[in-house]
Image 1: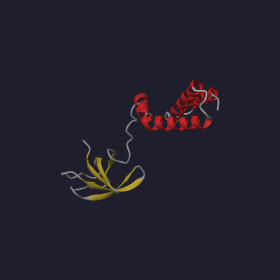
Image 2: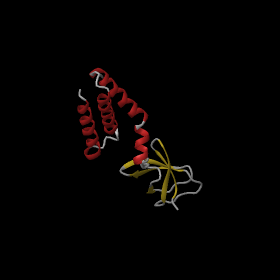
Image 3: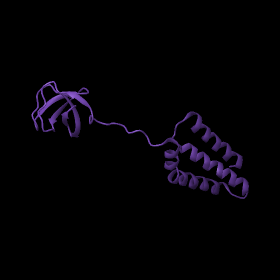
Length: 144
């Protein structure tokens, strides 16, 4: 491939990542590798197509493995913490619960077993907070 073909291909990949596709910097790094190979082919005209493709493959892999995660974290930061499951959620108990007792509750459209994880009894209709999840059992404590 000609040197200008590598540079145009790299520019298209860079433009696609920056303008249209959010590929988490994969296209940026592959596009940069293509531009570097184009500049290398311009500097060393005797470099054959096989050597160009090999250099492109090696540069792409090294860039993705060595730099992508660091560059992504630097530019985008850490993704926000996603709350999974019902831990931290609030609900109302349908029946009274003594310490260590359990009952069935509906939480977010699903039926769970709620277990009083505190030292005090919780009255029927009491507001509780989910402290832990053990399989299908919610450990709850009075919300207050």
